[in-house]
Image 1 (cartoon, rainbow, N blue to C red):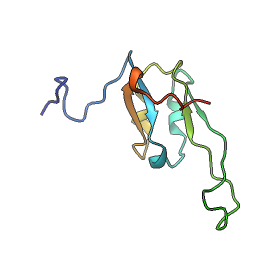
Image 2: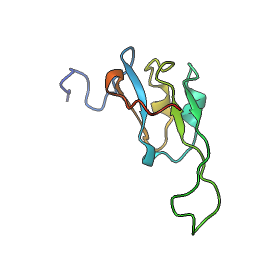
Image 3: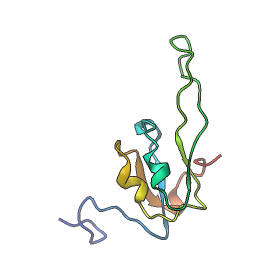
Image 4: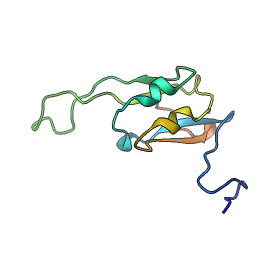
Length: 100
């Protein structure tokens, strides 16, 4: 079965014009995407406090952050993510607040 772009169903659009985007709440911070990125476009974000600080005072690990200028859309990060927390999107539709 093929989708509207005449690609096999489930195929990921990659390459120029696309970039990786993190699905924040799906990410479990395994960081495989950081080492998989050949352009060093993904870094570990800062650790953060939990939403409900009454239950824990331990910091939560930082989520990966993607630099839209460095990301070439190769898709290597998607291939290694065990939680499917990354997706490829057209660069003009990417959220602009991914890299701080």
